[in-house]
Picture 1: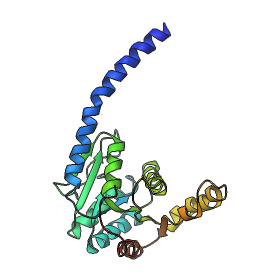
Picture 2: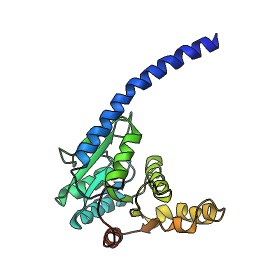
Picture 3: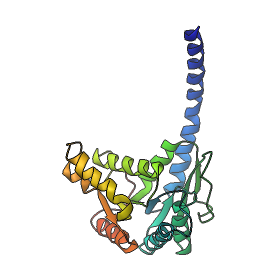
Picture 4: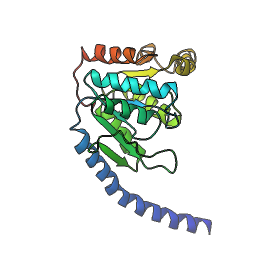
Length: 228
């Protein structure tokens, strides 16, 4: 009896998955078409729960503004919190402000600082993550939760395994990120699970000027182009 129910359910899932391919393709095509036109941009990640009065929100806004002043646009996840701060800083500074929104049952909603022609909606996290990685010239990672960590470690893994070109990954907030970085060095590295050069993929800073300096120093030696 149990086998029969499982078999029927499995066939239904397989059929639904087959049709989902077309929706996935549509999200990729729409993303590629729109984002291929935006020019060099830097992604800013961080918590959707950070309030406007918080220091990290204000710092993210300043970071975004100075990124725009340096000639880049800004890409965020399009939602509230740090994402809103990133789009707000870019918008006020007169730069490109992109939002890659994801439909979620809580937390996520569009913020008002995204350029009207540069707001994209996704159902699939993995499609959205491809867009971040392909069209970002750098990742600026503000304090956040599991989603922020997910984006961070995927980018590090793709660079480490040479699946994409190297680009700057900047963690903002030594107080917030210090414990994680220490664990990476004292546990992952000590146990031989990563190489010493992998540590060099991550920069940890506290100011907007340091973020911009890292980006500019990197691209004095490298071309600005999609990452794969």
